[in-house]
Length: 415
Ligand code: PMT
Image (cartoon, rainbow, N blue to C red; front, top):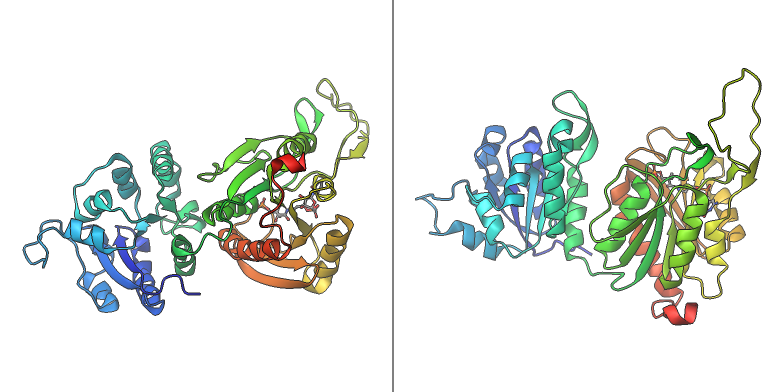
């Protein structure tokens, strides 16, 4: 389905090296049969010529709030009423600040104030500018008001530094924009997602942990929310902000995560276990910091509770989706290992990822997923985790419906 067909997209372009991507965006939007009108800020026109975007969009490009040559006396109102969505890509730190504080000193910021259509932004800036407290406060304000953020991604930047602040690539921006128009596949469905690592205490200052950053689980929680679900995220210690509209509970150890899941799972219809839960913990963590002696140190480990298997074994279990982190790839038996976990844990679906492959799995922005259920499987090729999450949610929704749990028993009958 092409959710962008016949949609009217107002593309705002602000100043930054990533402005060159807006030409490709216009081209792809038109290929998706969207109508596109472009509004550029003054600094954007230092990076890309309006003529380019005019030729690609087949429409006049708007630059000035007060333009005697404009066919409209009030372009900010006319454009705001015309569009089905405002997409600002790239969105500079300055533009985000203006939107957050209601400033209206040029055509783009003014029409955003007047717009009733959804506003979607794809930020692009230096990593320190993105991480600056003021930008993060502005982001939080805008999220709270319903502005959708696509990215930014992490990686090498035009300034030569590396970190968060890269504008997402055009296909990801298009997918994020399309999500605005897609039917809410999980409307009203209650979902519980676990994410991130757990920490198992060795003593008061040390722990057993793992490399999970939470990115995969957070992307899934966000995608499920976007598709209408009511999402509870139970997260191990990570540095990510809670996705907008998602209730989050932070936990530390496998036991904490098990307790949080047990107390809330009764209310949920879909359970997705993305967390990298420790399989073992210290049987008796030391009460004081263990001193260095130069001798061998042996830690006695015991298994942690298997949260996923416990949820799947409940009498009125939700639709259960597990993740399998394997160091073997597709050719090394990934499907077999995942299939065994599907059966052993008694779950409905397993999503396997090859965590031994550089650049995907733990910590990185990308992943590749092999999704298996009892009657089929699908490979989601390597892509950013945000994109994979948007591809995975419709598969989960379809299998969930197929299992006939759409109208599953309510909370009281699960108790
Ligand atoms: O967080 P990121 O950096 O983005 O990385 C993403 C990821 C690699 C962590 C994620 O994609 C992933 O694979 N998560 C599952 C990791 C894992 O613990 O795999 P496993 O094969 O050891 O466990 C199988 C399943 O059992 C998982 O769904 C896990 O949540 C669950 N489990 C495991 C142990 C336990 N005690 N309780 C559980 O519920």
